[in-house]
Image (spheres, rainbow, N blue to C red):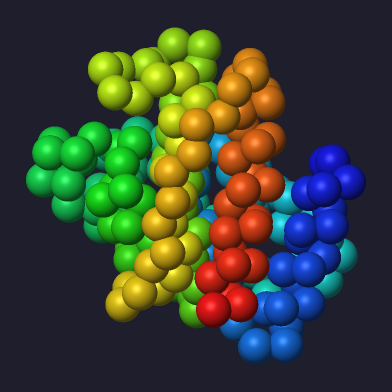
Length: 159
């Protein structure tokens, strides 16, 4: 875990403990990287509830109740998909973060090049949604996505 990731996790832990909130992660392209970063921090059981790695569309529908129509109309790599992922994950905790993107090297589609990653953070009623376009290889894109997701949670909690 990078120094930046560790620092973000420490800040996140302090915020969640202060607010008495529990975090849930719903991840696709990061493959559980956000959850792993969080649980690498000693004491994370006080604020981390659980994590979902919903790599396939079927898993997103089954485990997070993402509507098939959202995936058919917008695709898994979309703001609509991560909003639905957060709504589904938030059933298990106080705040949820979702990540879905194209880490590469393949998988690009028209309008969604490798490095396109959508993020959402919030609960069933309110989400903060952002899209990023990262560069680099698969590992770099995934690490940048983990760090961005952690930062987005902090941004959401600070609002």
